[in-house]
Length: 379
Image 1 (cartoon, one colour):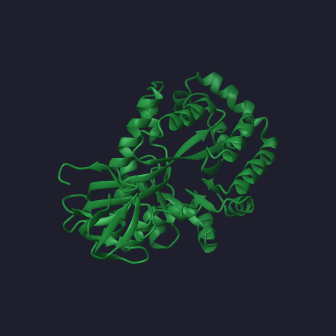
Image 2 (image 1 turned 180 degrees about the horizontal axis):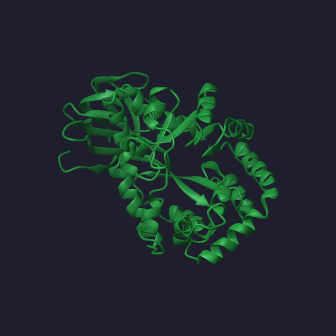
Image 3 (image 1 turned 60 degrees about the horizontal axis):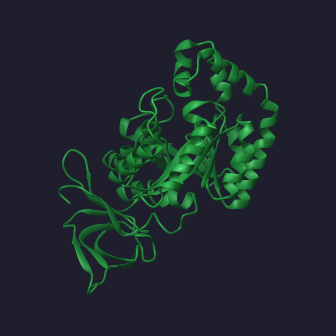
């Protein structure tokens, strides 16, 4: 059925907000403007009409899988709950930050497999497009074969290089810091310590493993990101491996170097909404204002990704159209999805209708491939 969204201010591809119409048919945008005879009209009466959000990195699904430390929910229930939250947050394409670590429990290889199986099993039931952003922990050497096969088989859509084990090892004698890891791993402090030290003993094998996985990713056309970079030198090293996305840099110099090279720097939307990093790292809003941040991700809180562009615009850190592209056009480009992230003829009809009024803006309607997956009571 052909549909025509009328009466709204549309964020058009390459431009700003324009009072125009959007025509949708067979899951695609078939026209912007024009009369659209014979189409069923959706009157949005002055609302904003925006491209659906592409979330480059979100791990809030972990709270649906394990809502309390050590308490697991059946995977299908957790994933369908996540799907509903994503639709309500305007996230039409979600890259789930699944951590593949040597740790047992929530971030284990076993949980990764459960998630892969769940995504495949529920594919026809989901409302939004679910994809895998695999956060490969460098010391998880026993998983290299499985991860390489997953990339080559198309189950992994984005590879992120994580190297957190040395930092974890430095906290093994601090019970307060160790509790976070043992709670999600579901093991005693002594057992976690044994596993961590065993992983550290194999550090010399890490470079070869990373070389192999990044080589498979490059050959498979899978984008590579480097997570939590701590220096310019680390950015240069990861760039040589093909990691052209600098994700959540812990060092400002790494962000500056990446932006100067035309690479995407990813920051967290909760950082923008809260007014700063919960870890004391760089302020994402200032990075945006300085042209250092090219993508915002939900990180640990899905609703922040929708709200962040409005916060940036209200604070004068970026024009709204530019701020919205940080959550739509830019992440789609970074992962090679040229069929979404913009409202233009031929693009997938991932569209949000937004009422910008009251204390915070509200999503009235979310469409994925032309199908309404969320509608508020006042839509």
